[in-house]
Image (cartoon, rainbow, N blue to C red; front, top):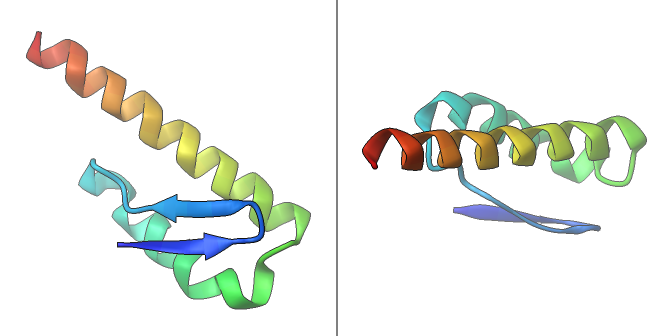
Length: 61
């Protein structure tokens, strides 16, 4: 699952902790896309998703 923004695709998180944030961003994208606040939230979401992926990778090694 994913949704498109003016800056590109936003993909569903691997870690279920971020599912609520992803769903909120997806739901509000049609209205907020392009605003600075929305871009900051998407950036924070993507950073958290990447950090959690790396953490999961380190734990399984």
